[in-house]
Length: 178
Image (cartoon, rainbow, N blue to C red; front, side, top):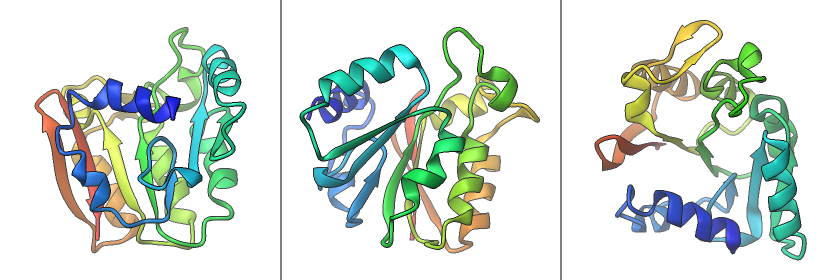
């Protein structure tokens, strides 16, 4: 509940159409928010936040919290998923910048490669801050990342994906769905 509340507080002003989640019937939500909260999974790279969330969510058996870099942890997080999931990607480099050498400012391209390897090819994929990619705020170790690159990577998973943007300019989420 706390994680969902925090997620809504963080993104609520950006995403006015919360019915978006009701439109997504997937039984799993990886990694932040769900209309079926028994299946929330989240990964946190920052040790301090991981410990805070772990403490706050200790009594909540509906949330599985993982610590580490999302591209490294995603295979384990997704290993037992046998139905389409809603996957919300919102990873950033740590404030101290220590993890930038491995994935740059955003690991989204690497996360999408992991999702591509998963046997299910019809997950709903949500990418936060999509406008920021086109504004040049994010890169990976190979250079700048754009929304078109992200869409192309998602189409590599399944060429039938459709895209829709939610939110207001500067605070948008890209939703890839079938």
